[in-house]
Image (tube, rainbow, N blue to C red; front, side, top):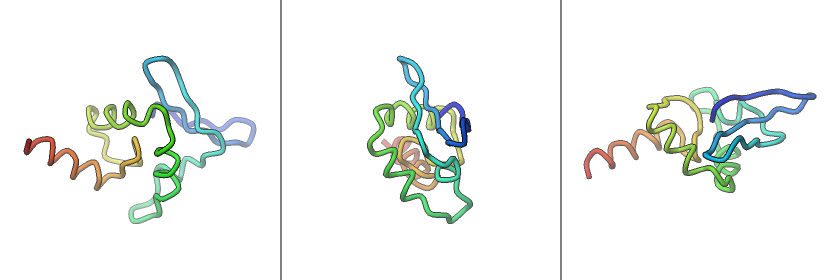
Length: 88
């Protein structure tokens, strides 16, 4: 995820991929960056149907992103995944 933008009163979360930029229309940026312990169900559901989910997650893992929902995984999910990858 490269940037969050608000346009015309509608929030969008933009994700970059190899072929350009994708937007999640009507997505509140707070859904992807909730307060610690906040609900992430809505963001994970949106990510589940996203065509650049794998690239988004790979970018978050490569950049050691510690906050937010990326590629459908939250902070704790990514931490567990990193541990499994390192143990393999």
